[in-house]
Length: 387
Image (tube, rainbow, N blue to C red):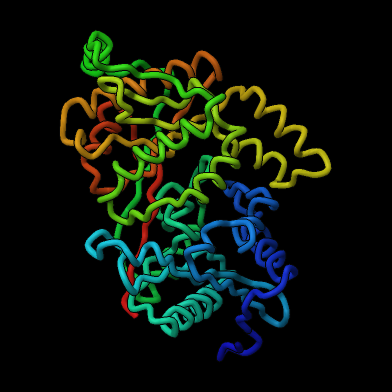
């Protein structure tokens, strides 16, 4: 598929060698950015492998590489999620919604050619609108970084050069939703009002906030998934997580799971809320350049066994839908945050924590973040365009 501009060609990814080139161009175009964190190459290859990533079980995906005079200069994924098509359109997804993601471009010309190719591929398959970038599932790395380019992302978050934003917007894309992350110094105790709310909850015999039991990993994961799907089911962009995706993600995250950093809140003996916190692996991955061999895996394994001076990220939390408008919901959230904060400081030497992403119109979660004096440190924008 030759582009109109001279030696620029957009080619579909077909072979194993193509997939390797797809990952390699990501490294080459980003390695000079001091705030970019390279992915582990093995994991990056898994994400785009239909035999390994269960996302492909309910999605159609085509990867493309841009080459100029034979040299890779960009990449993009075009895809649509069949589960997303079952969701109500007023929640952001719905029938006819396609996506592109895993986007990198050496210049504006390459960006234009790649996005145009993704649009053609999606339109040919009946898509009528695009939400992008989403790489590739909404549960992976949604949105283009539009604020916070001056510091590295935490674990499981993306990073994009600032000049991508005008390139995307030049293609007719308009902001559909903003996702925020909040930064806070976890060494600082929370305001007195929050401490009183926590103390009140501790005196309530109907409330029990407990650590997860890693020896019952599958059972605990099932509880968390059940709460998550209930808590998030009416959120913008929500797509149900399949059992296969839970197993796949659980296997990847299990080494990072610490019992004192993941809490489940019970009310009258029933699990009603959870909060998951992960030590930030990104500093260590950056130090080894995303390469496990020959010696990177030793450093990484040593750190995973006992994380030290670790920043923290709260990627997921949820409270059952029936409680979300109640005072109990915020009380449980504050209790879980506080217990995790104490453990993060005492057991891992944590200084900084990051909460999110949080939808810009999620008033409850934004209010909780602001109540504990957290500040917005990054924003990711999901754009929309009609085809």
